[in-house]
Image (cartoon, rainbow over all chains, first blue to last red; front, top):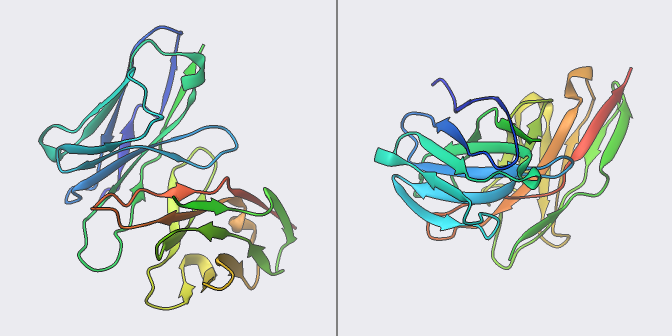
Length: 116
Length: 115
C-alpha cells in the first residue's frame, strides 16, 4: 500500500493558463474524490467517481473545471483559463466501497496551485 | 443538508495537559463522523471515525472522541498533550448517499502545544 499520490505537489501559473493535476489512488480503491481547500478553511467537496463514472459534481465546479477517471484508475483534474480565485490546495482522496459501515477516505498530499 | 461547527479556530495547551477540541454537527439523518489531522503542507490523516457501533471511539496517537446525540457533539480529547500533536484538526460529517459519502468539513482548529 503506497498511499494516494498526487502530482505535481506545487504549481505556479499565470492567470488564463490551463493546468492539469493527477491523482493516483490506492490500487484497489474504487471510489475517488476531489476536494479544494483554501487558506484557513476546511476542504470542500468538488466531485466524486465510482470506478470510471463521475457521479456527482459540486456547484463549486464551474464549467472551467473538468475531471476524468479513465479505466477507473488514476484521475485528472483540469482547470481551464485559471483565475486568481482558483489558488488553493487541491486534495484527492480514495476509498474502498463497503457494504456495512462507511468507507474511509485516504487523502493524498495535495497539489498547491498558485495563480499569479 | 449536513454541516459541522468547530468552536475555537485556535487552541493552545501546555505539554502534558488535557486536549479538548470541540465539534458540533447538524444532519437530517444519522451521521458518520470523523476527525482528521493535517500537518503543514500535507494531506489529511484519519484520527478516528464514528459509525454507530460505539459512542466512545478510540483513535490513533491516544486520541478519542465521544458521540453525544442529545448534544449533537463529537468532541476530540487526549489526556496528555505531546509536542508532536501540534497541527490542524478537522471534524467532518458524511451520510450514505447512494454511494457518495462525501465529507463535509468544519473550518478546523489549530492546536498549539506550549512547552
